[in-house]
Image (cartoon, rainbow, N blue to C red; front, side, top):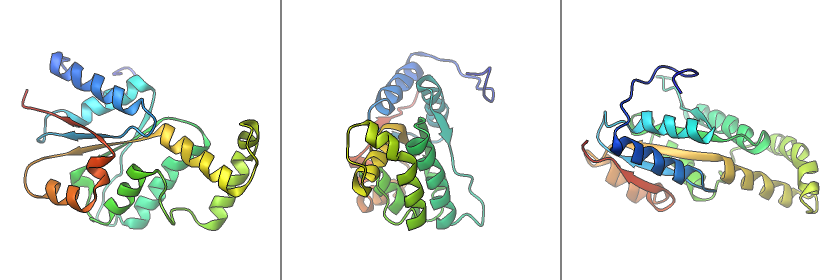
Length: 197
């Protein structure tokens, strides 16, 4: 990992290895999303990156700035959808609770976790481009090339290739209130709790 990425100075003791193995097992599944719960500095992001490397996935994280808005998130999600759905590449979307500067971000994350389908993410002309790109692959899979089959094929690839890894801290009421308001954060993820080392 360190040969091709930023240096990660990790001592892989037993607990860390177990967490990496758990994350790998979660994100290798179709529609497999992980919710890593632990206090800051417990290694959630580092171990998630290592797990993604083992699976051969690229890691994507949003870069928060004062001007980062819902539209920027939608653009980033489109990029990940195109990579996972059109290019058939594995992507891990790594998201921490500190990056959720607008609670409305979680509406999109909730939909992504629940079904992989985010309403109104793509404009009509962008959907047409997706349909045209996948028509041959849909035909090769033995299905009739129509709008529904192409879209289902696209979402199927998203579920296979795009995996969300949420890194949340249990401290305070934020985690509890988000889990109640956006149930897919808990219902559609596999939870891995990082106890004190």
